[in-house]
Every structure is written in structure tokens, then in C-alpha cells.
Image (tube, rainbow, N blue to C red; front, top):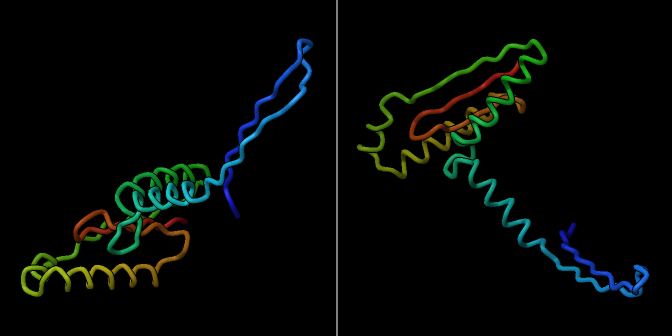
Length: 131
């Protein structure tokens, strides 16, 4: 699929009738893809691939509205990794990053598609369970 931007101008006679049209069609696919990538990057934690804090709050509001509408329940878990700073201090940032990536993968494997999983920052995660 390609994205295009089109612009058309009509030349009219004195009676207002269209006598000629001029148009330009421009392929803007690259611009649209770049915009989508920027939006995705702004809402995703780059290390884990999970939703980030911004995406969490935006989506959490939608979950609350859905729960009200459907008279459903939400489960909310805020998880903070104990002693994570010690992992960084002792084993280094690379090991800490690997650990965060593994934890994110475990959350993905054990939550449903409808659930919201986010890294709020540092060693803090949130999971919202719908229904």
C-alpha cells in the first residue's frame, strides 16, 4: 500500500464552468511510515518493547472507560524489582538490561493479548488485567 497526497486546481470560465484542471500527486509513503515509527517509539519502552509510561496512562484510561461501560473488573499490578540496583552495581548495565528484557518476555508469555503490560521506568512495571 502507498500513501499519496493529491492537490487539484480547476480553471473556470467567466460562467464558472470548469474548463481545465491541474493536479499533482505526491507519494508520501516514506513520510507516513516515519510518522508511524516516531509515534510507536514515543509509546514503547525501547529496551523491553513493552508499553512505556505514556502509553500505559493513555491505555489505562481506555481500560477504565471500558470497564465502566461493560460493568467489568480490572486488576492492576504494580511490580518493582527488589535489589535490581544491586544487579546493576555488581554485574553491570548490560546484565541488568538483559534481566529486564527476560522479565518483559516472561510477562508477555503469561499475560493475555488483551492485558496491558508496561515498563513504567527503571525496574518498575505495571500490568492491567481486563475482566
